[in-house]
Length: 249
Image 1 (cartoon, rainbow, N blue to C red):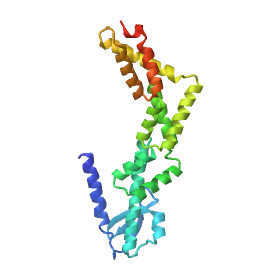
Image 2 (cartoon, one colour; image 1 turned 180 degrees about the vertical axis):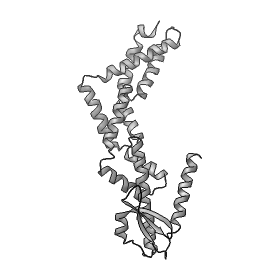
Image 3 (cartoon, rainbow, N blue to C red; image 1 turned 45 degrees about the horizontal axis):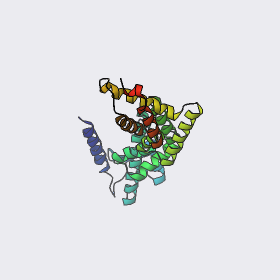
Image 4 (cartoon, rainbow, N blue to C red; image 1 turned 120 degrees about the horizontal axis):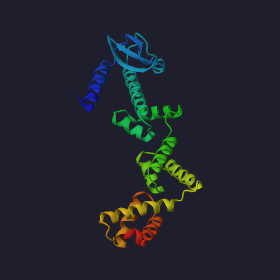
């Protein structure tokens, strides 16, 4: 069965369980969940109609014999949504680092409502299990280890991962500033990339000369894609194009 099939089956099973939650239904028992004792099953008849946090059950006054009204049904369904949100969130952060924005989008695709998603994310953030700044720092460090990059690319990459713009700007500025303090010059890194690009252009021409304007355009475009500012792109591209040893075989 494909993944989509499994998701539909899980949703169908949940809907079938919750069908027992209706005004006038009486709770037979509240039983602890075997895997997570902080959760309890709300049993109506022989079926577990919902699985919610024990604190929520206490707050709602649920116990054996409680007859559900429309308000309690809505509250139990909402608390089941919180349980689902927490389950999917913990699975996601166990697989790989993730930003709060990415996690919220993932939960919404699972059908979790906005309030439940935001509540669970706030709880996990408060516990230190989610940290957008630390995640952003890891993304930037990984990108810079792979290949030199300018602020524009790094900022765009963080925003694509749903990092808040203020945090993204601060993390990028800090990372590039730290590199500069270690003597790593951005213009020199851009030059190394540009020279490599120029050599590859010559190689594709079978060792024949490449027109300087072609080199300028191609090198400029490559540096721009790597996020370097226009002034650096233009200056480095023109400098490489003037290097006859780089352009001509």
